[in-house]
Length: 263
Length: 175
Image 1 (cartoon, each protein chain N blue to C red):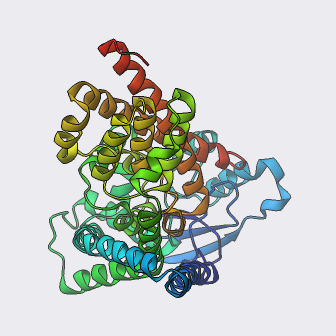
Image 2: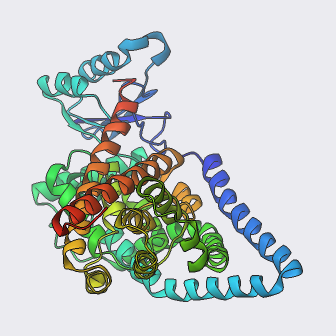
């Protein structure tokens, strides 16, 4: 059976292409001959038809399964209608994807049960991989810890309380902004939140502050970007900021409605 | 990620650390008391980070050892559906310790096939902490705690759906 892997380069050490249609290479692994065929997909020649060209390549090479990153519903439908199994959402190297796919296939066939005890070399390999993953992020983690120390020293509770005006909309926005800048154990946000409440700040501002404290991380941005990518990090934090405002309006609004208190 | 990109990212992290050390160095020269206080606060954060970091490292090793990426794709991938969202939400809620201890784990999960929706739901659901609920109740009362917890979970799931849509939308340029 043939397995097609969309890749950014011509070898199995290449990264899996994130988009099926725009993949520059299709690596075809033949499990019978145990050989690999490299097909160069001339993406620039096909413009908007790139995806369809990849479907045609997969069909013409009699591929049984396609391993890829993202694939559009249309392309997936065409492939599946022609009996080609699609495994999408895969990232990492083509070789790892192929190895894992073959492993999963073997598990399903029962050649190798899922209860198999790991061998010493597997444990060492897992330890080595995890250590590599952690050590790569340690410098930025130490940097973030130093930054948190600065914020904790300069942004005192008194200073934070002084920013609030007592008006709902500015306070809610301010709560989200301050919560986004500060970080630490959520318990600290409860304590500061209670203090703000006692000083006359409404539940709107306090809720926005506590929600943003945990979900938005301006101080963590360098680390989140290093770990999860700039695009994902910026979008997620922006969304979390917006949701901290929405959560504040819904929570405080419902609370005042239930309790019958003044806004 | 090619080798050059990887090198660039690692050196970026190192540059950030060097920059922070420089800031502290300058502060020690001009405002030694404040710099000392900030260093002490950083020390406390670092101390609190050790145990969660070890716990997250152990979880990452176990995932590397026992769970194939194919299973992660099925459980938390882009097509994991409601079960994937619930699993990510539950994992986010029960995860303990500072978020920066979890980034290496999340990076690993993303590389092994977890979807952006699951990662977003995990990160945003960390705002709900069952062990801290009694503290929240004592500060703000039971009604407020229930409402906030409910809306935070709804918000986390909605943010996850929007992230999945945004990422998908970006990918639709090709096929």
